[in-house]
Image 1 (cartoon, rainbow, N blue to C red):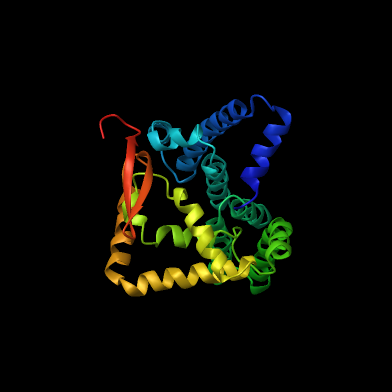
Image 2 (cartoon, one colour; image 1 turned 135 degrees about the vertical axis):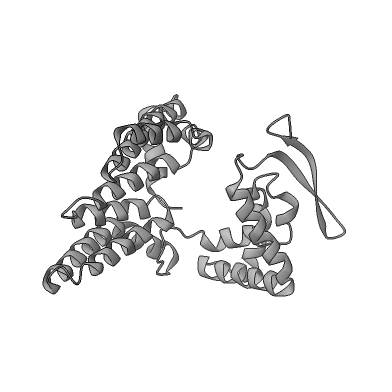
Length: 278
């Protein structure tokens, strides 16, 4: 997975070995407050009135799923701080392309899709073609791209040393994520229990392809394609199911349970819902 959030947790473990989880929640709580203030600033930058900015701040602060992320051990809060800061800088004139490239690199090291922010910076630099000298456009693009590459290079080089593969994203688990979302057991467990429950099965299947990361990934990719081609309708169903659950106002997974296998099929047993009303 991308390295910055594990580094953040590792630093807290080293500094507060007995209370690192509490420290993580407290720091993320402070960053959550910072996110609300950045939302206020963003609305004001967009030309909104002070009253509108306050309403936006309160709506953000009252968002239940974001507050759950504050107390979870996930990178959501840190990524949101970077994302909001990025858009605030994006609205400044002249745009600080060096800072934007650096923030895009930091976002990339928090979540793989953070790299899209650098593409957005480059697109905006090129969009100024009519109003800016070509030399200036080229300089802005190079500054932003150079800052982005400097930030991400150590981690991308580490991935290459570990796997022998050149990765575009900041994660080497993309293939595993695809398998978790497209396998014969997905509709049985999702969104009821965590799909990570399937990891022992996934690792066992991956080892059939070989011992290197590249061989294991190739085997999982082959299985994913096989599952999709065997039943395209099930693929569409899984995709729609994930999309609807993503938009749902409740957190997932819904609870805990186990899988029981019989006659080649998986059955969810001992399910305990997170909420007693489910």
